[in-house]
View (cartoon, helix red, strand yellow):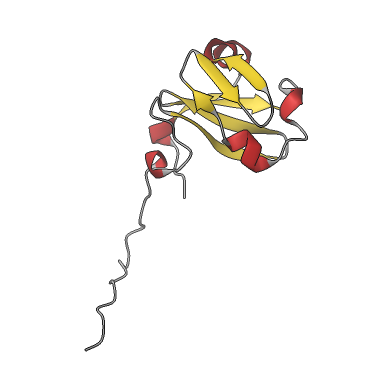
Length: 106
């Protein structure tokens, strides 16, 4: 007897929730994407864009090290990079924000 194969949904796009990411902490903190000019970090369902011009200590870091953030909304820590920051600093320094629900993360 052949094993059953899962059916693919046609016509509807399978949307993954950003909360399914393995990088989410229990306090809802995650680096959601990294680009050439900066990265997005989500803190309590709001994403903040962090340009490397402002957050220069992340510029030459490996992507996997940037994504490994721990802590809570008040205190964030990147162990591999030996960086500690307050969540409040992202709120003050980020000029672009967006709601996590408004973004389609595939």
